[in-house]
Amino acid sequence: MSQPKENQYVTQVATNDDYSHSVQVASEVFDLVARYMTPPKPKTYELWYSYASRDNEALREDVEDILRKSGTLSEYDIDQILSEYRDNEKRIVQAQDAIGKHFDKELSNILHMMEASADRSQDYSTSLGEANEVLPGLSDPSKIRDLVQSLILRNREMQVQTEALSENLNRSKDHIQSLRDDLADLRARSLKDPLTQVGNRGYFDATLAHEVSTAKAAGHDLCLVMTDIDHFKRVNDVHGHIIGDWILKDFAAMISSSIKGRDSVARYGGEEFGIVLPMTDLRGAKTLIENIRRQFEAKERVLKTTGKPMEPVTASFGIASLGESDDSLSLLSRADEKLYEAKRGGRNKTVTDELSHSA
Image (cartoon, rainbow, N blue to C red; front, side):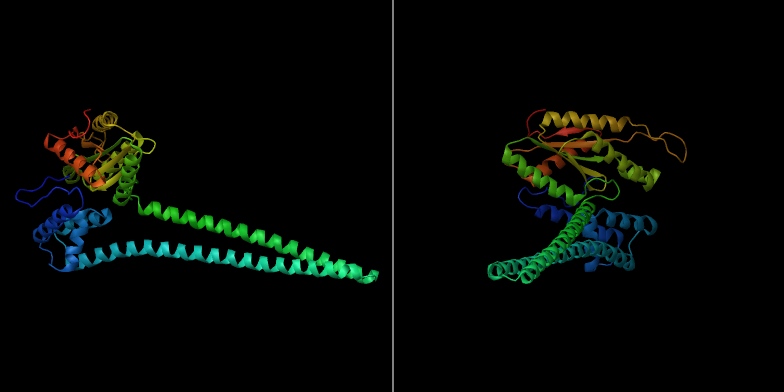
């Protein structure tokens, strides 16, 4: 996480809404437009706002790749990135719409099959009723035989139709299950960070809101941890972004393997991650995070290009425990503040929220 620049307008995230956060992002947008001398057009501000708010990591990576190569963004670059960004969102919406239409079609088919089956059952019931009325008055054996054979034939037809209905219903059931699986996969992919394979910002926001609501309703403990990799820009500058990506994936995997149960981790943006720890008090959270911090610091990494060991990479952590008056935004604000405090205190530290219970 980069430190605020001197004289740059920065505000704390508001407790009740995200107004001040939006002001902070907007301030950064104007700074980016001026710094890279990009054309001051609405589409430029749209691009830089998405970049500064970290709501699309793929877009950020595309922007940074062009900046490394060219030092700025041309109008063509801006058009291309925004086009791809919008196309990706459009493809997700289109895929969801297509699955929804298939659901509607299958349900309509099932309804049609059930209506047809009900009509056939009614016809068969009518035939039985008519036979019941006619049969007592028949004395001619041949007519009785014809009526019975007719009923047997109708019964066989009903059996065939019932078997066909069952087969079609099973086929529709399988198709609906397949559509459900596709929808679940699409939703999972839309909430997963493609690089680190942990949750993305959307997943983080939804999970935190849900867990805060659940914890407050049940009176359970909940801790939120915000963390990022120390001097990550230096890692990218010295070793390149391939190594930087490797470090990000390694950090995410290390966190994922250390948490359990309903605990969750998501890439908040850039090199920053959020860890939600339901039913965990501050002491338990700090013990877990300190284990992760020490494990990450101690890991030996050998560069394939040179065969030499890489310098240790560390991370800083801020932890906040859910209070009675908290919502997800205020909890996030306090955890983020503790993360900044760990950074200012020399990095490679875990700092807990003083407003929470003592650890």
